[in-house]
Length: 619
Image (cartoon, rainbow, N blue to C red; front, side, top):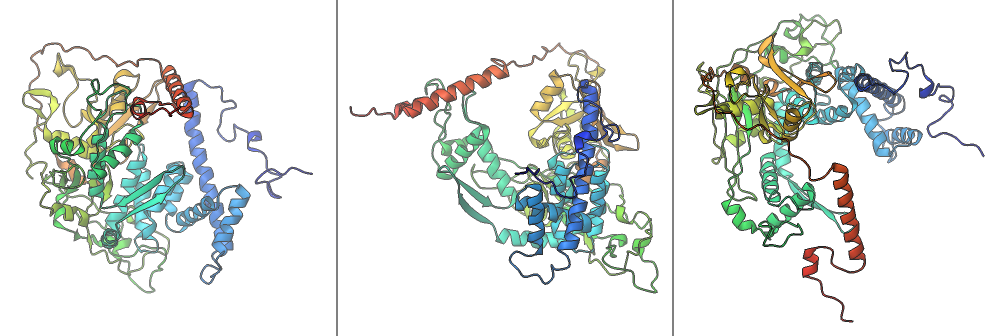
């Protein structure tokens, strides 16, 4: 009997194993036993190598699709058609599931036909493989459209900007590019989606089940805020995970039953033991969700620039004997006035459902901006660019819904007409600078600056973090000197940044150093950096609110108040400590869980709640 390596074949038997390849030729160190700074450099290089190998894998899968599927896909009606068989061949060879193989084929074809410039970014290590699925899935509906090449170029240009990406920032970037090129289709899909809202129940294993409620994004954001607010009504000794608490809170809101802390303390020592959901909803502050948009989005679409009204798709060849179209001109641009706006729809009288709200709008005079697409920046030698109209007579902005992401302009206008929504312009539309701080305290930002920074940053600015800015702290990039404020830590747009509580504490008490300063080439934009222990500098987010709402660039704030008068010294900050080291806490938690399991196996109560209902057997 012979043993065959999984995935090995006639062509692969002669291939040199990866471990035997020349590491120097691959740009890899000869050993992994490196000091941490060099190990980080090797990690970054390895990540670029993984991206290249993934691109190579997609290229090979696309070749297999072209050979085994495309000749038959228009007429193949078999249940196990050519696509299924090709995917099964890949799945069997690579020992992956059929679903994974079908996804690989689908993504490979999408990168080849719909997103070739994005594929080049993957090849060059600009984007990591785990972001490709996001890009492919969120551009699926532009397949076959004339503006697909424009969206591909827009996304690739954004990816090549210096900076870091988190999954949430990647999603809003892709959605922004699609919405701007596809307003009519987005509007039609939203109406269809609203009609198809649904509530489903799926039975799972171990006596569990999953419910899914598909509703408009703003309703979901309000419901999630209500659930998390109730779930937070527990003491620090509650033993459930955050997800488990949220599940219990959701059920309590739906059934209007009590919600309580499950700690081991008696009810006299924990005021969170029994919470009446109805009373809590009646006395709790209203729930507000924030929506950021532009004034032009509220008023409706604007005429599209001529450069975006002509087909640039490689699917269409130019007509013979035609003059060059406006799309072929490298400088075809049209200025569009864009005023920056922020909207916060949604405050709930009932914790569970009702919606009313406040809105913040930035209404500053905007400088004209160029709407030239990267796809038409330079004349192309390729025979692309027919004079077929795209149908993009108008373009419109989008909205950013905190905690949800990008929504269409039509959706924004729907929310703006809701009588419970309050629209608050950020500024008065003039050149008058806005106040930066509160009059009585130069440490605290004004309401206008607070809203501006959160709308600008969108998420925690730490590389890779998904925490929404509206749930984060506003951090002074340079530590604020409470005794002598004039020495540093300015409370202004350049001096503040959104950080989630974890990264705020990491910056304050760790050896991480952040910085933030105006971009020399565009002073309205900021360059952000994080210097990690060891000295390596990592760039901050590549895509921010400025890219979604360019009118934010025009908002200015006034001079800071006089801080030359010394203030009383303030007690220094002290980092909180754990009651025990992390490992000791983990072991104690496991011992408690094992002890509870043993008691339950013996038919004995394991918690005070179980003890209250326990009745010993009658013998």
